[in-house]
Image 1 (cartoon, helix red, strand yellow):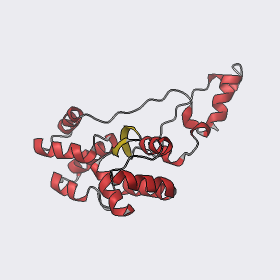
Image 2 (image 1 turned 90 degrees about the horizontal axis):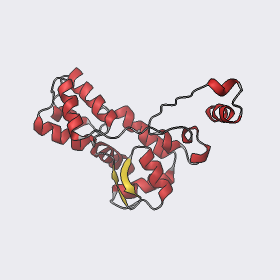
Image 3 (image 1 turned 60 degrees about the horizontal axis):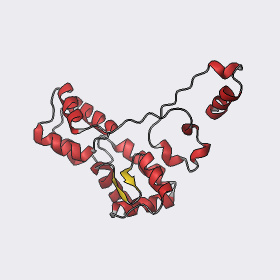
Image 4 (image 1 turned 180 degrees about the vertical axis):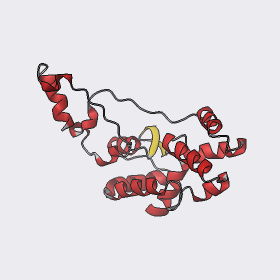
Length: 185
């Protein structure tokens, strides 16, 4: 539907869609569902990427949440989340709302009943629908490169791995690595 509207706007400038502006916001996991990027509604328009938070950003967010994490906890927290914005924001909210210590949070961060249980299960569910991609991820978890650029771009676009090329990849964060190791091996 979005593609049709987008195309109609471009091909028929005086038509009803000429004044229509579309904005699509989506989670990174959408890339895992899409095998043919050319048939996707996500390959038109301007792509705006949200970069991972830097350590300094996390220090600032911690202060804005009332400094629930001390300096040594912040280093461990940053390594655990890898700077992933959703994980950091949700974690800080839960730590404050539940008056949790960092150790309590970290002990359950990669568990089904932890802060990210629903998010982690969704990643695993999406991966389970594509056995070939799951096998590639098993290799990455073992320290191997991606075998091809299609799987590299899908996993990176899905927010599960990071890296600049298929030969230099790693898991996006320690939470993902720990959870997926438990469920894929």
